Length: 219
Image (cartoon, rainbow, N blue to C red; front, side, top):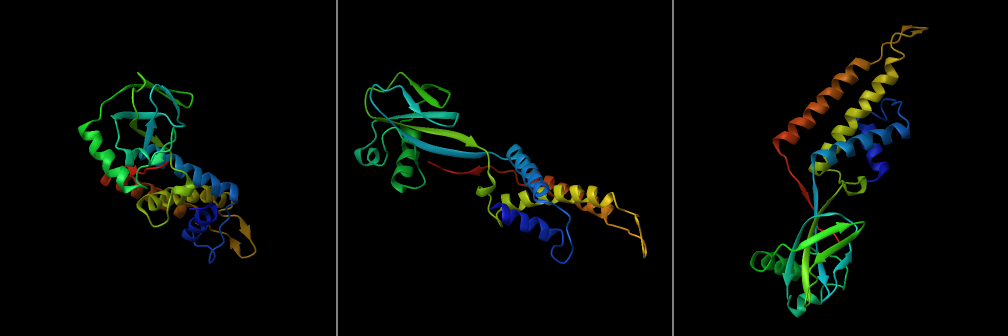
């Protein structure tokens, strides 16, 4: 989802273009930031990659801090050819690699001594022969990774819409009852607050009712 798509969805939910919505781009960005923060606090996006190990080599560049590393010795030659040296590769992008890794983890996999520091993964002791390790790690969702129409996308828009209503309530609340030529103007600040609370409650209900973890494999 792009910023423009998120903005359009938020404003449309508030009645735009039929109704004028007094929100700036900076305020829309606050809504998006708030929703992403909550999403990343409630859900875990898991990643899993395979890394080809070189005999005698102990350290490997790896940008994310892992939470699990599994050592698998002596991969077959056709599997080893799928793995660029010292580079992580998406398991899901290659069916053969995925099937082998799942089987090999169960049958041959062991937990090596490993450490991650400053973007480098250290395996101890270094392997004596060509080997593979699968590395599991989590990363936060970004706006671009959230798809409209998906479950996580619907939850994101619930939160962003709730935040937008609270901001819009604060804006309109300042002018409630302001005298005008036709009498005092009554705006919907209280209605917006109630709708925000309802959206937040709907988010909590859906999260508690169907807690899930997003699972991604990336390279």
